[in-house]
Length: 138
View: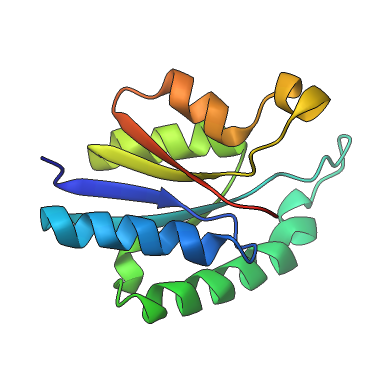
């Protein structure tokens, strides 16, 4: 039984499929659904004002995540856009919210891309809760 589900949305075209799967699981288990999107930090090489560089990306991500959440009737207070490394931020949010299940997308990469790893793989192997990966093509 799952009570709290966290869906990591990368805001590509495939993210709608991922959120839909998370939404279906949340409905099946009568669970609360949370959405997270991570904006990766832009290296500033020691210069102040990193948040100013990232700010347009954060604003754009918030706008897209809000639209996605509205499409699935997910309250805004159950969404978050954070700056950091995706694996780290997803796992941190999962721990903070006492998440039972994480839903994350997988591009289904092969070869060298697979060897280098992915967010889905990193979350899968580091999570303290169950993880569902939803395959999609980018």
